[in-house]
Length: 94
Image 1 (cartoon, rainbow, N blue to C red):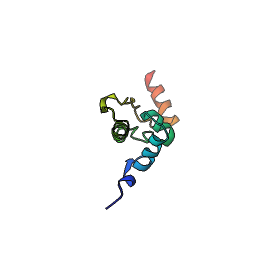
Image 2 (cartoon, helix red, strand yellow):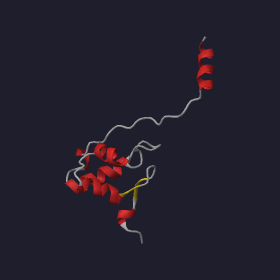
Image 3 (tube, rainbow, N blue to C red):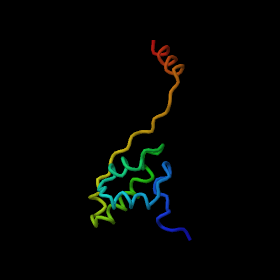
């Protein structure tokens, strides 16, 4: 059976529960602070998978209700667009 601290919280950035707990022990109190320290929530899913898990850890650590943990908004994942595709779109707009 795996150690609970080895549980992956952020799959995109491969961040474990131990790393999240370390950030909390070092004084991080928000998801955004943990994000800046670890990159958790900055991968392709933009936190859709891990932000609630991080919020639960903060809630547990600081003994505050989950709904009081500030949940940041997430951005739509960016996708690279080639110059050719952009040029074609401009030609079609005329």
